[in-house]
Image (tube, rainbow, N blue to C red; front, side, top):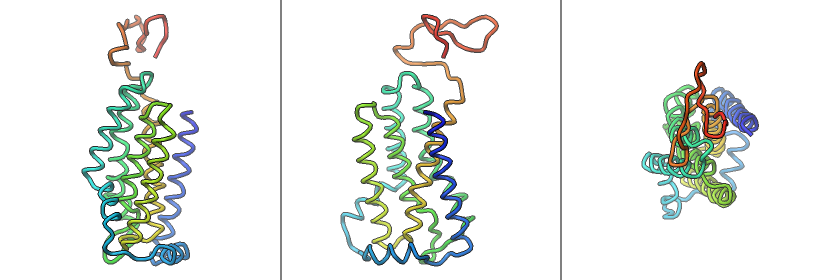
Length: 219
């Protein structure tokens, strides 16, 4: 499972990097953008889309990441610390890297603003992936579906409001998925001592840096 997660993250980030390289040298609208603008008509005063875009704000990012981390703490007993950290760090990392690195380096402008990748789409995608990772297994399909619908709605909103090119929105979704999955994978490489009410007493084995669990299981 971790290696599948790594492969998915690598694929998403590789496509994002290829798109970034292309639009850096060809910043104007491409065939995908022109098709997207034809399919999604401009809307300047849509209350629905204005509400949707709130889920791409800093407040939504903080609340969404923190709440996902709390859920992960109680729903992932085997990876309590790792999964909670991934949910807490992953979405903000995607947003920060986008704003501080990707946008300035790519340099694509839309109506005078740096636009690649879409920060709003990256935020809602990152939070949605974090929630999909945090949710109990029986709830995961529902949470994933809700998150997917939210990402699609955000993509439609930023294009319809003419905040972004369609490829900006597509890259935002790929980047959000890739970063959060990569962070979640990286947390599996760090041996954390299991914490929580069900962790029980722990015994440190002499001559070893690993923590032995009750019954002989080594975390």
